[in-house]
Image (spheres, rainbow over the protein chains, first blue to last red):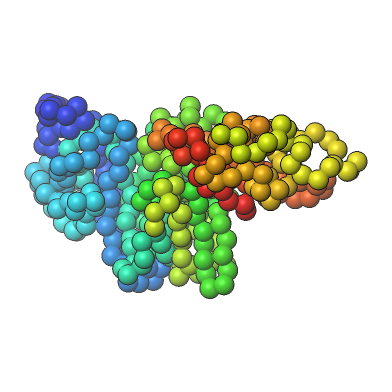
Amino acid sequence: MFAQTKSPRDDAVAVDAMRNPVDKSYRRMVEGMELFEKRHRLAPEAALRFKLLPRHRDTDMRDIRVEIVGESVAIPIALAPDNSFALERRAAALKENASVRPNRKAKTMTWRAEIRTPGLPRGVRRLGDLRLECEVGMQAGLISNYRPMLFGLLDPFLREGPEYCRRSEPRYLFFAERPIFGVTLVAGERREALPVDRLYGGASRDPRWKDELPYCDCEVLVDRAYFLPLGDSSWPDDTRVEFEYMDGKP
Amino acid sequence: MVFVALTGCAALSPAPSSRDSKPLGRAQVRSAQAASEAIGVGKSTKADVRAALGEAVVVDFESGYEVWVYRERLPEKAKPPATELVLLFEPSGLLAKTRIR
């Protein structure tokens, strides 16, 4: 159907002529945007962006181009240096059931929602932002695992959509900026470190974690991966999620 | 470098009473606090820690960093989670960080 046009890099392909692209449904991503508006109270000061992340060690994350591609529409999307982007609602693209398509092959990248309250210090996230990231991510179908049962991750619950994020211990993978040694929730005087089983995709409780890794969209991000008790309402949305990085820097 | 001059994990905690004389399982310690005090950040190597605490649950990353996990053995009828001692080794093989939870 589409002729593949290889670029000099193996994982880079032309946006407009590509087989097996790492694309996502534009319609589902717009549904994610609608959910963001509906649930904006979780992160009232934040805006919604989407972010591309590497899925292989050799994925080239430089010079990525992204377009909304339908039968007749091709709308370029502005990508920030951190490979995040905002999406606009376009009636023509919805009508054509378009895709959001980076110029990379399938399985080379994964996607997440990016919702950040401005003004937080480095190494700190806000729980309400992350709750909403999970809900938007599930609604928009951003997770890119390639085996239904993986680390016990998501699996049948993938079909639950955003409701999954309201479970007390959902296994929705978040990725920190850098490899993490610890993650601590802080709300007022209350501080609680996450158990190590909630870091690294749960690798510490699964002796076969390396066998599963190639199927996980955390494949090259496993040292940055963590789960949160999103549905535990004893932690307010303003809870600070503080990271201790392996390299010791803030 | 041998920071901990201990030859076995049993030496790390007070002598076991008859109640907890059962041998420790893999990656178990009697006291996470005592275990952490028996090793030194910036000093202990993986071999030192293995000699002092026994085998850990190891999560090793492509970057060369390794996370080692030990858990306290729960007393009979105690409910999990057990207190955990988490260690980070830097790519050089030296202990870089510890955490008890």
